[in-house]
Image (cartoon, rainbow, N blue to C red; front, side):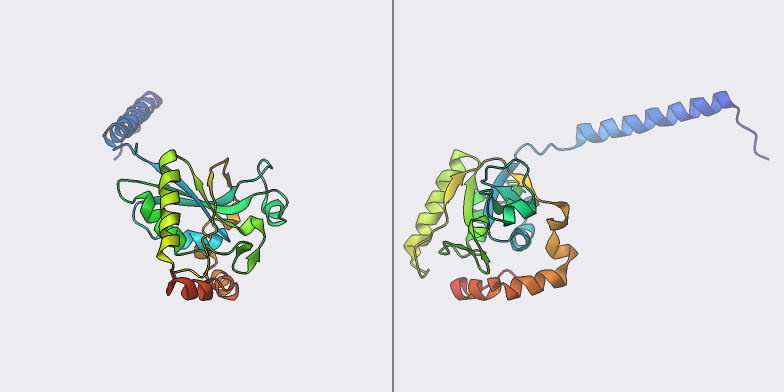
Length: 212
């Protein structure tokens, strides 16, 4: 037979459980290793749906966020940006751990997933809102991006000089939720768009391979 627990005892048990839970959480926070050395990279390479997969696959990349950068309107919507009137371009913000992956490695992945000689957009997406561009967040990134661009030109493997500009990062605005991880949530639509836009075909022509 179970003895009933009076209200005073119940309150005492609840308080004891609460103190135990708080103690466990504090212990976890104190023992957790802080991620102090986290950096950002921002690349524009046409449709941001197609820029997420190759970077998500890299070890050391913590997160990717599709969004807009480089324009004059605060908190722009997809409709505004896609009209080509705000000055923004679709871009990808990459949060990464430089202890596991370098900015130079991110640059290499970037080049292999864009058409750097296209001056009018990327693949089937035309207009400045789909331009390729590197947005640096530190002076070191600027130097590395500039050197990488010069080295790519010097290799003379492209049909024309590299056009992709290198610019200081302005405020980055995350895109609407339905754009995030689009290739994972809508794989068939993503594959249909990627192929019919000519992205894969052009990347094969330029680099001899594609990410997927």
